[in-house]
Length: 311
Image 1 (tube, one colour):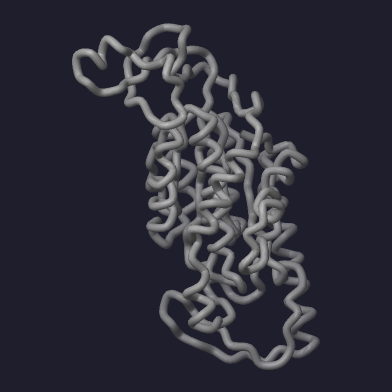
Image 2 (image 1 turned 30 degrees about the vertical axis):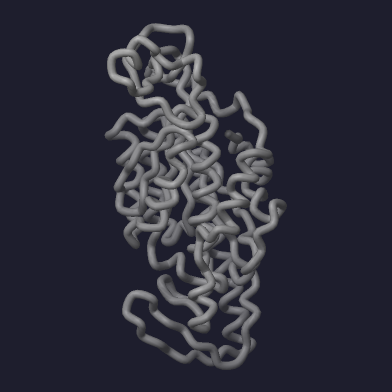
């Protein structure tokens, strides 16, 4: 976590704020390259629970149709329907496997902390995870910070994914986010991207998922100042919600107190995930302007190492 109070951040220059566009053309090119290079994995299949999945396939019990989209196999097209409607639809069948991802994304003001702001990494990591799900799984359920949900399917829905992420309301209500996949019956994996502050609020949400037999992997984009607040002298803080500013003088004593507070926060975050048998993965947020493949592929290597699986 950034060491300053929730919702506050060091005041950056206006030019830097303008440059922090989450889904620039350069990032979109990187996103497509990550999807192209990332291998498929059978680990994405979730066989737990009695629910069935519905997917385009050439075997199984027929369950209906869905519109044919990018990423679908042409062999799944129902040509009889096309002859009647002149529109492409894929056959949908049921089987025992569920290949979906529910992506919970924290879009609250606390993600404006840091330099570059944590929000930049949060949205970009969410875009990468979502894009991989769209290209490899049967459905992506995107849940934003206030519990709003949208279901997307197929690689053709990538622009919709980015639009929904960029326009998500500034909110993070953990209990509503956890309730949403339960109420809607979303199957498959749950991945939660957040700063997980305050930990107590997250604990109640994780406990709810556990009571319903669901597990979730937490992904925390980590900033350099989350571990070592290397600041001395007078710094400016700004509340992104109100615009209020405050000057704070930082000496060695206050700096050490910040380190101790950050360490306590990390322990509390780890504890709430461990208490329910879930995994919390911290991934370094790439530096401002770094759009290298190596930097933005880190979350997947980190999740595999921590047992979080891959798409």
